[in-house]
Length: 183
Image (cartoon, rainbow, N blue to C red; front, top):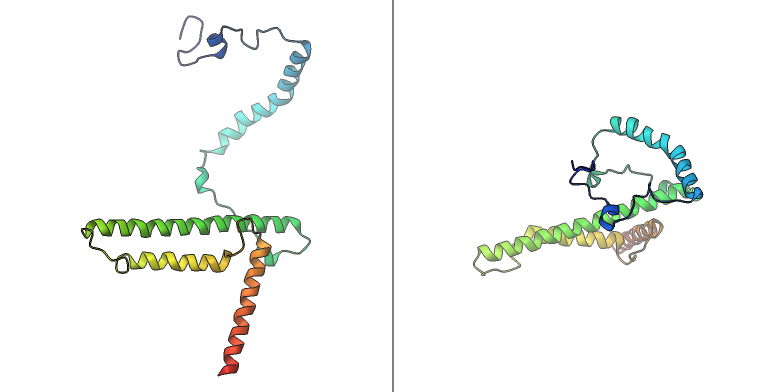
């Protein structure tokens, strides 16, 4: 500690610029009143959080391990239940982000595999023969992603995706009926 009581790591702004700390500055009575009222209102809340909640809370959990509970899908919601529709739309957005990240990961796997195979095989390579499994997985996932989200646009909603799915199922049923009539 230094002679004035500050720890060596603690650098205060008022010492850098040669001004008085906020508590020692001349303040208007309104500012002083607001500080007293804020301590009176915020004091108990802050004390309760620091002394009770933080002690029993446990260690903080990383944000990337956050798991959301599944909510009802759009076909389980009533048409006038705005809360359910909102939650279904948010779930759709999360699922969409996850699906696009899966595509990115599969694409990276394929490109890493093909890069590694080219180096190992002394630049004698044929893209049709190396990393066939990774390429098939990537293309299959892209096809499934297009079937689910294709031509919807970046700002689509769960209702648009549900209608796309409904129209696809109707089209498949009609195609099946046409094939049965031909045979």
